[in-house]
Length: 430
Ligand code: S3P
Image 1: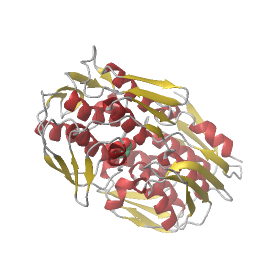
Image 2 (image 1 turned 45 degrees about the horizontal axis):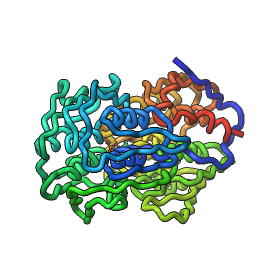
Image 3 (image 1 turned 180 degrees about the vertical axis):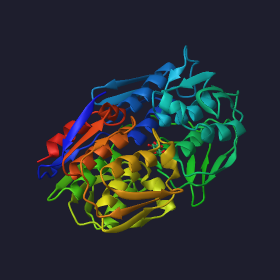
Image 4 (image 1 turned 90 degrees about the vertical axis):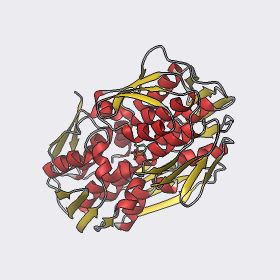
């Protein structure tokens, strides 16, 4: 198991300009929607990393020509044709986005398909997509508790549903929309907890699909999508690590270029500003439907804030980083509505509490609320991110902010989303 020593003794700062890998969420969606379109789509800036590799591999298993060409991915869409029946179970690796999105897509236009994944993925809930897709007529066989491996048997034609989303999950919303795009007759309506990342809703109209978003619902109908050429902006969830480092380490200033500034992804940066962080965002001029810009963060004195449950979907992947920032902020930071964090690659609440407490943080969890007292002087320790990429990267930054030596165990898990993370960090460390 690879481990990394982080030495917080030196007076270190982060300084410089950088780019981050392309956005993972947008990339998964372009790949899957591209596979349904007429013509060949090109997506530039699709990130390396195991999760995106899993989506590419699964689409290939479904009979889609989809390959990396230099720094782009080309996807030969099937148009009206259905996905073929794979010769073997499709391996989603550790990527829940791959599995949940493909369950929706295959239910709408596939043949019998089994999706499997890593032991970590097999623990994650799939009932959130299986249940509504069953209402549309798809038949599922899954391991106990509706978990992976999952076999989906698509019917001849799905029937539309009017579905009230119980949780603000973009993966669930997207799975239903992908199925809805392939319902032969009628409108699929998705209502309820719609406040989550909206990349799918932005992409489909751009590809000529019929999708209408209003205040309280999304309506989608069968459509012939057209291929797109798309330049994927940088991933704000990757940018957030460097922003957090710059906010924490004395005299730092980091400029991250061409990052997605989609409002549904900006929760972390907004929270950092509320905490008194020095964040400036300059939007790029870009014709695409996905805004992007340059984000500059400088070190600043932070104060505690309270984050309400409705804001959490817009910073869900960055919540552990906010817990780290809260250890440096004056007062009690409270984050409500974080229960979804228990259902990620690992239980990120327990993992963050265990790790940050070892460093000396003062924090407590009460139901789905976490309270962190600050400021605390963190002191180096041995930290175990439990195989979770985002926890490993957060702990590395925590180690930089702490005095003394910190060892982060099992850091190779960064390959899931950000294979070059440590090299990028080294370049900025001065
Ligand atoms: C994602 C949505 C989020 C997020 C995940 C990626 C997506 O999950 O945590 O990393 O691409 O749709 P939920 O939608 O389940 O909250």
